[in-house]
Image (cartoon, rainbow, N blue to C red; front, side, top):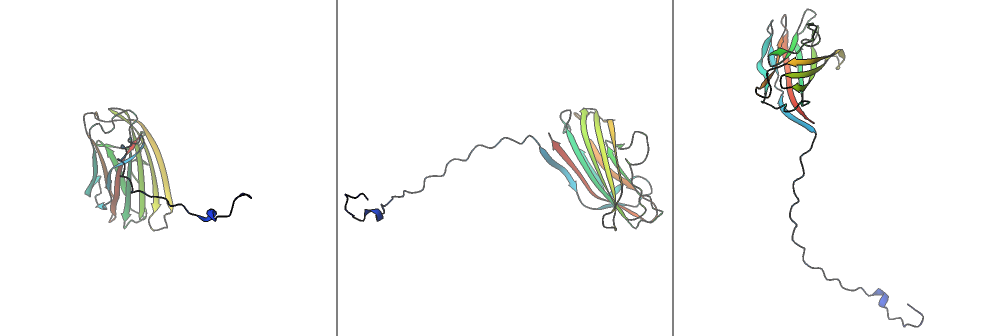
Length: 206
């Protein structure tokens, strides 16, 4: 208030504000574009399945997934396979072998050696985690990378062994015209039960 004005108390007057009704909700925005990268779980079987066969055999509940035609649609398209195996009742004389087959072909080292591609040898109850990456080179050829870790089942997860290898070019039937069967198999000796605890197939989207 200036010196020449009278004090009318106007400084404390609150002017009323009119509030109208809430406006209508606006229309929903358009759907966002699909992401360009990520992972799609194609298959995840976590039902434990067993075998006591002394030769390579399917598990009691077949651990298998059939990849649809042309799922790996372009060169560089990629899958990840995770398989978990374990033993029950293993002894020092037990040999249990795990296999992963792609289109009926065993994933194994180019030297023909059993280890580490096709098997884990257990002398105690253990858990084997196999992780395989498959990349399309062409419609009839796949690049395969395999990693495996063997854990002591009853020893607080102690790592017993770790292995890895690559297959530069695995020949397969034309995947643009044929499905690709992914299958886990196993065999064991003595009275040991060999288990496949999980088979997962993921599509890695680039």
